[in-house]
Amino acid sequence: MSVAKIAHRYAQSLLELALEQNKLERILEDVQSFQAAAKNRDFYLFIKSPIIPGAKKQTVVEQLFRGKYDELTMLFLGILIRKSREMYLPEIASEFIQEYKKHKHITTVRLTAAAPVGEATVEALRKHLMSIMHVEETLEIGVNVDPELIGGFVLEFDNKVYDASVKDKLSQLKKEFADNLYISQIIAR
Image (cartoon, rainbow, N blue to C red):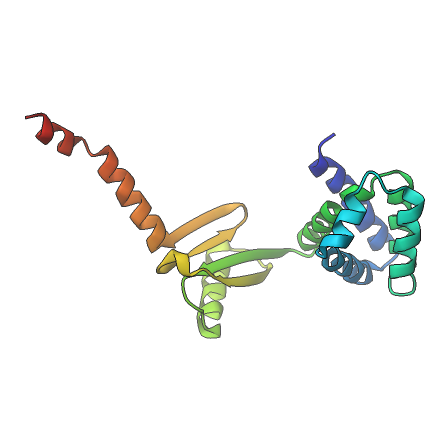
């Protein structure tokens, strides 16, 4: 079974349990905290290691998170470790956050611009996207700066990418010039 399927099934199970016990927001905090902890390279390698026994991992997880995480989260982590599925925890955490957003009707939009973008521009983008999407969802906009774009922006949402960057336009022009049949005909004469 693929990692994506495993992560989806466990994340969906945790979401359903959290909803059933009215602990959705609390479990989300725990999962986000775990995801932040998994960004630590040593902890990530520890969780992913097939060499370290599950009992040792269980002890470390207990010491790190007992008292800080909800009992449901701790039980969930324990089950995954006992079933030797702890190596999928970072992926399960990411998938849980995606499922939470889907449940709460939150659409995430990533805006990457060549230069810093002001709050007024972000709000104008939010209003425009809400009008064209025709949905009553919450729109979460993440802004990144990438000077390599030269100018313009890249907008990503709903598995779609709208690239209006100068870098992309230059790349398209370069490809057109490489494929230009007129130049090859002129050289042939």
